[in-house]
Length: 87
Image 1 (cartoon, rainbow, N blue to C red):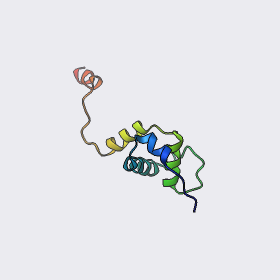
Image 2: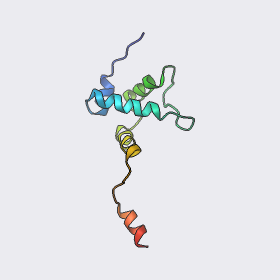
Image 3: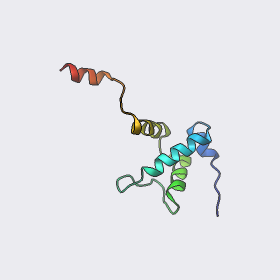
Image 4: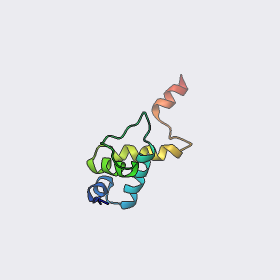
């Protein structure tokens, strides 16, 4: 079995192996017919997600925000929402 080094991936997410695994797991779960992998995928979904992160093809900040918003029930107020409520 070929092993890859995830040092680039760890650097992409800010230096934490835990964050790398959480980001890759979230990305791998998000694959669907509408959300195809950005790299050629000959491996399983988790390895494909790790390769995308390592290559810098996905924004880790946006992916982290999607992970949080998936389970968030109350969203912070924004100025746009206040303007819509005033009208």
